[in-house]
Length: 379
Image (tube, rainbow, N blue to C red; front, side, top):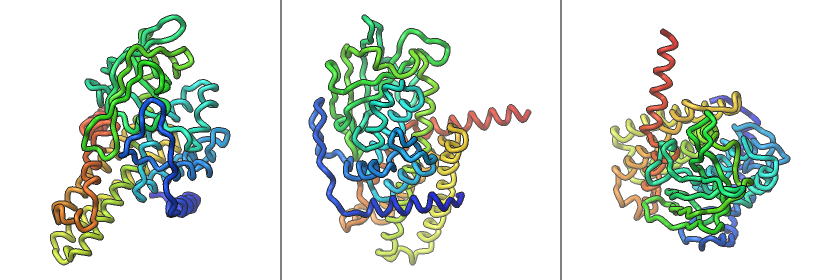
């Protein structure tokens, strides 16, 4: 990993902020539904980061950032994960919704929403996944039909995280007007209190609330369109790569490994050579996974894009995190939970992360395709 003294200083500042023992500030429930008891968004931390320009530090100051690089944004994501703070709002609001507006939004859309996002005042949801279109978003069936100077959206979106806290959503829908830059998909800005939008909770093992969002003849104006009609596919691909490049995956794996070490020390398991050998292997794997994660971030800093590096990083860090959590429970079962060890919430979260932003199988397919292309080029 590169040594960056400026990033090290920034990390120390973020850590100092996250150690401040203050209660989370209450947040009024959005009008479209009541806040659930299981919501984990810490508004105090997000607004404190936002006040310092640290929530989206890679954005320019005019939008509430610091004009720094993606490495500073990666530090924030990693430290949130290391401190056990939910990064769902960071991923959905900054990396997906915010980056979409920053990339293809109109000046008006950017001015209306980016400063509020960077300040930690606005939480957004992402409406990409559907019951029949998960990792393969090109098959989505939600439609947006042109009507009287606007659009009418109809369809069902699922597995939407923290939608109970969100004001707006970034929604992908199929439109006519494929102009050759994508499979006829357009991105829309959808206020979640719009008539025809219904948010329903889903009962899953995921530690954070997930929702199904029903879009029943939702009427939107042309101002809700983000980017070119029918040309959203390159942007969607970019947003997914940015999400996969998040250091939050690696940060969780590191936090869980720390809990595993603490448990082994407390129970005397370190006296077992088989345990120490397994821990040594996991520690080495974790260091390598960290290098993969930072490689994807450096790609963003250097070229503004990341692809296979992000896919490989996401695959390795989420699978490794799940392996660490499984081994934790293999050693001591539920006794670890009952005595204040790693919560079973980590077990549920680790499984879900191997699916988020594309399953592990999809990540391996992307990596394999890239390797095949390289071999073909080499003759």
